[in-house]
Length: 72
Image 1 (spheres, one colour):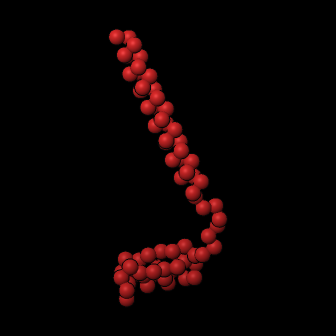
Image 2 (cartoon, helix red, strand yellow):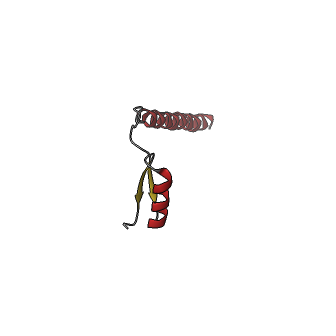
Image 3 (tube, helix red, strand yellow):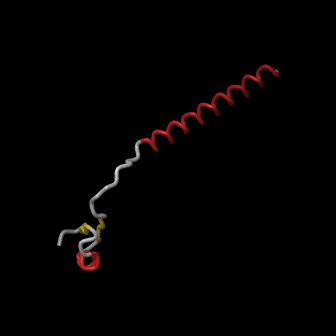
């Protein structure tokens, strides 16, 4: 009986290590895929409708790129 419980417990340990390895690998791939180059374009802001778009455009000036979801 102890042999079976050791096998079950050992199987659990193997599964635990496998899951940890997969989590670590996915974290590494996620971090590697991040872009390190700086984006030189203006930040993009979307407005939900035209009055908000117009107000945001006047406030932001040339510092932001403002677009509207619904065409004017």
